[in-house]
Length: 101
Image (cartoon, rainbow, N blue to C red):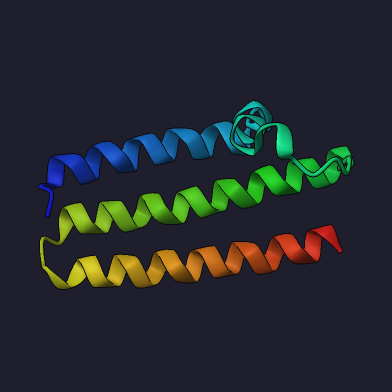
């Protein structure tokens, strides 16, 4: 679909975003995506940091998938990346549900 340059570029952006979330500076990004309809429950600072780290892990996994897609130029890697992304999304949803309970 895309060439490996796009995969490297996307992996770099995802990795930089993951660093921002691991540093604990991603709350502004999360607020920008949640908008004014955000759940008004206040998270404790520890849970807020856990939430940001969970998003950071999610982005690291997506970045690793993009690196593998850039290195292994095989059509089957598109299917593998979709499966890993869906599994990653399910994993983060399960983790976040436990965090909010």
